[in-house]
Image (cartoon, rainbow, N blue to C red; front, side, top):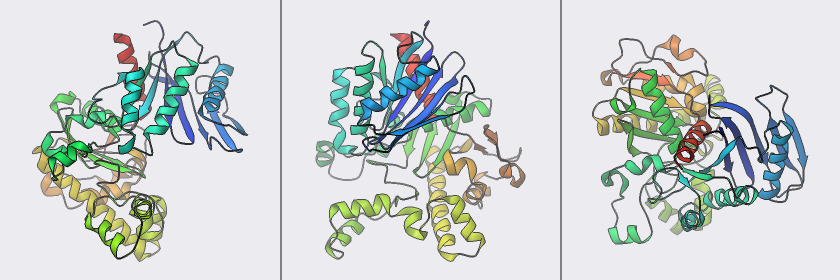
Length: 402
């Protein structure tokens, strides 16, 4: 393929994140963020990585996503990297929910758009914004292949025993209620990168991936295929997160409705935005929580202990699911940077073959690395995730086959 560049777009309800990559060497040519779209104080920050130039910022009214992408195109053009460049091979779009239908990256046409739109009821916060970004990009470059890469796709290999909830089958099927999982591009990338770190092929390695950011999820990956993951119908299920509760008794919702007289929207806000670490101690920044713990703050200490307790339960559960574990990989903001979280999550699991070396764990690096001693039966790794590179790689591979 003569064209080698891929533009990766992650469109939110009022923002667009983007990166332009050259797939000949996976290098980043430019990256940026547009935020507060639709407001008078919209802001664009653009960084031209290829030239090593300084970041440029622009603030002013930006009415919609079309205006935002036109502004992005203008900034790229200043660096000779505009959307009209013949070097641009495709645009890859992050799409949060692909349901059961989309199991791999997909070239976007009208039928694909209609199916993504049909999934809005199970992803009301994300798919509409993803669709807006796709439609805008298609209008700007209708001749260019546009590819959807789905957060849920990596998890479609889960067996029905892991994907099904134990509720009435007809009701579940009618309303598409099942466990879909999220952060799939991250879990795919990190599981493969962990195998590479071990010098082995992905199909020969069983990995527990812990994606720990403000949103957090775990996955059990057997031979390169996901067999279980912690998030479910929505990103609310599973681990304790920055503002989300994770697992809880569903009857809590009925109790809050009946006794607390809370509305559905109020409960939705409580569980998604006012729970997790911020609900437990008022902070969702792990650095601040650790600072408070060091000063003797008991609420912060309890929040940390609850976070670790849930994390450890999932490590143990996925060890049982996999039967044999070659590695456990920490990734994302907390997983990559919070050494106390990694140490606490593995503490006490020596009988399972998991040990963290204190000195290796304390090292800060942007490179994939092992933090377990050489004699450990299960490798413990820190593997920085790269969702944009994963989206670009999948996009470029697909359009190369067209």
